[in-house]
Amino acid sequence: MNKQEIEKAIEELKYQEDMRAKGIDYQVDNLVINTAVSALEKQIPKKPEWNLQNDAILCPCCGLDLMGGVEIDSEIDPEHCWNCGQAIDWRNEDE
Image (tube, rainbow, N blue to C red; front, side, top):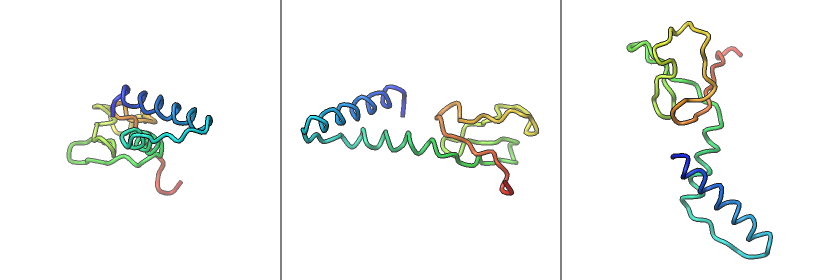
């Protein structure tokens, strides 16, 4: 899902909202609905995946190395994946 697809989905959903406000029944394309759902799902934080063999911490959605070579003990913990935008949950299981 790229920026252009997301922007098109937003535009289409706003158009649907306008049509319904005017009393016009308007069907939304399934691609628009799927894009909107995917974008919303990425806002739900997911735990990163630990790859101890390669000393990497991976995005649970796209597999990007979130640390990009930075030491695992570093204070750098991105809130979102730089590649796909997935929200990352860094909390310990005890929290």
